[in-house]
Length: 366
Image (tube, rainbow, N blue to C red; front, top):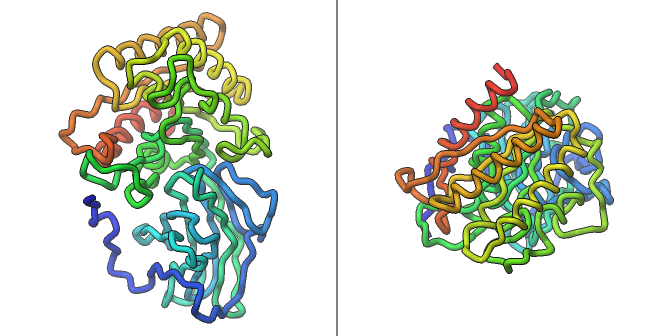
């Protein structure tokens, strides 16, 4: 496996490091995850307020802190985050070993107030990540939280939206957490371009009615079945849609339904129609954009485009004039492939550029 090393090169800032440990003495002020000065975005379960858990990439934890250093506490084996301190270059930190429960993300900072942003960048369905708080310099505290962008987007998707394999440059590579990075996926880049919040409901291999290479009749654990819940594949907690009402919803599904031959286009169309109505029911004031991803080509791509065009036209005929369509340019390999033929980081940048231009015009987000 080859990885893109340049992404992780730090700027010449000695203040930042990523050191995981549970064996060193921990000194400082412990800030619990339930502290009201911490800002969270994304679908998160606060069933235990001191140990919030989540499943989906793109989940963010944001806080302002005082002092010269910062440590992050999480459950061991929670996965990878991208961390950013103030305006410095973001970098990856991991909780991927059995004893990784504390990671130092900043040290030797100028004494004062600083901003930390953590973004969960892998899929947590198996890892079941848990955030447990911060450790600051002794006697220091969090400062009032920063304001979030007023613009709000939700991305509903599959592995493309997650960022599957985008840090690999070998199409023969399998899925690995080390090469998945949602921070560099088209959804996150587009949101940054538009200065918008983005919340994600996405999982690799998932479909509207049929997951990757599933039976012709479909799979029970498809997106419509799981969309109503806070955590992936966990039906103990219904999601409260009032917690986040986006201005814009981008649905990028269908690649897995149609990428292997054993599909039924009628079942796909009906499932998509029902799901579109579900999304509209939850978000009556949002604009909804139906996307085609960059991985399909040929007759399957044409069939997906035709179906989504018909669903858009049908919605408008029935009085919903805020359903739109957008097609990414299919990938050709010119910008390399990520793992398992998925879009590379460079392909994601191209996709984000295309989608940003479309959404900027649609939303008038200048």
